[in-house]
Amino acid sequence: MKIGIVSDIHADPRSLRRALEDMGSVDMFLCAGDSISEYRFCPETVEILRDNQVRCIRGNHEAVLLGGRNPHYLKKCQAEYPSDLLEFLSTAPLSIELNADQARILVTHASPLPPYEDYVYAGSPILRQVGALPYEFIILGHTHMPMVHKTDGVTVINPGSCSQPRDQDRRGSCAILDTAMMEVEIRRFQRD
Image (spheres, one colour):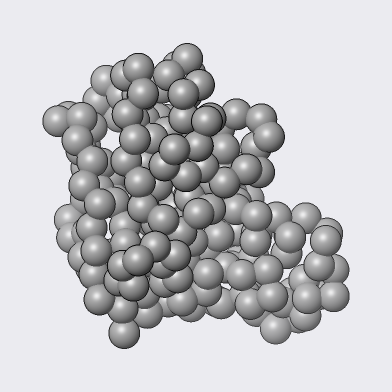
């Protein structure tokens, strides 16, 4: 199975479209959170995710908007935008576990281990501990920096950000996971 992965879209529908186009034909799309920004709900971004049947999780920005920490902006969104779009995001889980081919996959926005809100970078000490988890692949976001890291049979994938890269490469990024071949490809594309 080929799985297209995006994260940290932050309400940028043009970059999301570019990422989906760049990934081409895949069997499934996943979003590892932060499809919106806590102070910028973008109905077009959410429509693209919904219409492409992207399985999304909540990131920290969805948590701020939908979790009661930003009640004034949430009321404004509820008054201005279609309720089905807010429902699409509000029903997204904090994490997803799934099986594809023989691979067990966890999708979470930040650290898969406590403290769960931590950023996981290449070289983070937490990466030495993920090999004890019962997955072949762990997909996360949060850092806006693409990464593929292997530890004791577990591959940690961060597709980076399609709209706000934070590494030296200013192009957007996404990832494709091929579970039959057990391979990951980070893809870079020009943002508009």
